[in-house]
Image 1 (cartoon, rainbow, N blue to C red):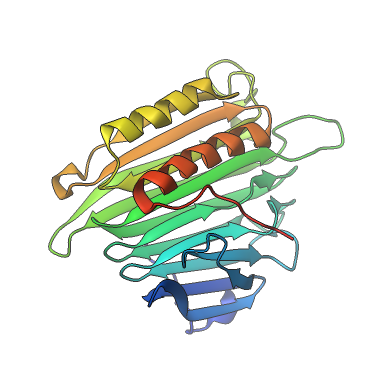
Image 2: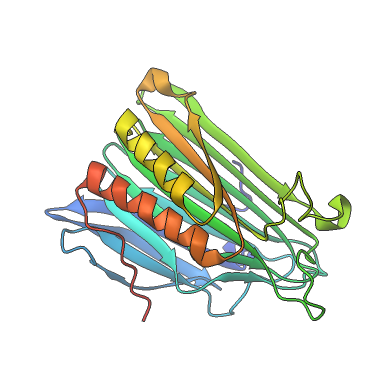
Length: 293
């Protein structure tokens, strides 16, 4: 991904910038660098698990993403580091007459790093337009969990899908230090103004909410994959599980869980249960508990 301008070089062009550089120090992870400006902030980090795993909560003091604003998030987890990133509340995109709101996210995971990205839902309101790109470069020994939930915003006539458009592109690449292979390239594009009845069969199948959970790790065993599939099938969502195998030459497996639902809570509950079994099996951590007060 090419992003212009770079942080520190005319970064006033960004509506908000957040950089986290996390390293392992002794028995816990710490921020080697924490930088923010504009409409992005972070709350003081917490150690919620009692085991040195670091949790950051991202805050947008402006309350929403606005038209033509560009936001940059850059997360770097160094060797052996462990990080969870969440948000204080839902990310809201209101009317964007000036042009789409755009978020760029870059993730770098060094050997044996662990990252969970678990934001609250994205809500796109009437006449809103949102574009998101996420680029991940992870070492073959690291672990990645990324959750996304999209909710249509309220409109005066109680009609769903009144936003202009939504696109979310995610690319995950894996490296062993010698070679690099693409594990996944995922793209979600919804243009209600062009596609007619989004809730019709063949599109959203009568559902209003959509979610995606991407998992990648060399420690994703067959048993763990089957547990994920069982949770998806038993959930209050319509979900499917896909295996991502393009980086198997580097020993890494990936899973994509895609869900349709009618409530944010149903998809979030599924994502959290899956993350909990990944935490227990791969990182030896307790269930995810995000305190937002």
